[in-house]
Image (cartoon, rainbow, N blue to C red):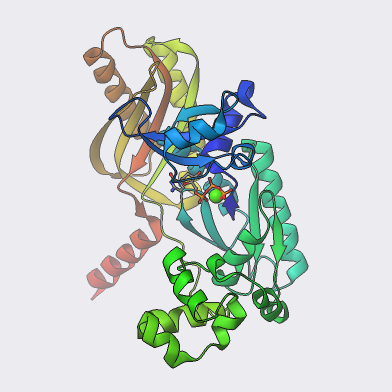
Length: 359
Ligand code: DCP
Ligand code: CA
């Protein structure tokens, strides 16, 4: 699953007044007012030739007066990303986040190995993301991670592409080698020089000739990829933290109102903690002020899974933060537990202790 023009789509959703316009997300370097590069652009802006990596000055020439240029707000994109990953985690056997806006999902069990079921799962995921976050994504379904990833790029935006085992060869036949992960402009040029343009040609190419140009390891790796071969598992990493962030009804420094919001967020976080069966050893608060500056405070404690302990810690941290920042009004707040311990580990520790003491 790969979200479409992610940063730009998030901004478009956040600010309906710019919907439908070309939108360009910029990483300003700060040297002069327009120095820096484009992080991404929505599809409207891409029609004008604006894309990730080009200088902001070039993008401004291409965008004329119609395009909207925004600074990148990475903290906010991370929040949205986290919510989406949690949303889709429930729909699969295992989820491996590959980047801020991409994830591999194993649906072998959930689909019982039936492609039509996998398609239905993908459609449900697309709908969920659309409904809850107002964003579109593109999904590829394949017999392994490599083919699924290539399939996810085949049709964008809002695509859904299925490549069954028996369709892999046909899919690779005309696939441009540039679409293979790990082949950038330079490698593509080298390969083009050998008369290789498609994945199929690369898969069938003379191994020795390739090794000579690319080195043994790279040649082998790319040739395997070009044949759609990949047996790497979807590896779900255990979460390092669980957090919830929300927007206050209005900007405020009223402790009771802010804490009430934190309490509400904690209830939702608690559900997640119970599902994951975790203990925590650190509690934090997240405070985002009216200038969108984010600050965090945290404290460490003995391991516990008691949400009330997290809440009293959050209360203490909030009081301290507000005392240190008199008059600062907050727009968004959050609560986070980290330094997590999974109960399964706990149990085996318990078992170990039990066996130890019984001896
Ligand atoms: N990104 C960045 N700088 C780059 C490339 C990407 O900051 N040179 C950021 C902005 C993107 C996000 O990473 O929104 C995800 O990268 P993708 O390559 O998936 O690009 P998009 O999601 O923007 O577009 P697409 O619809 O092609 O996936
Ligand atoms: Ca993307």
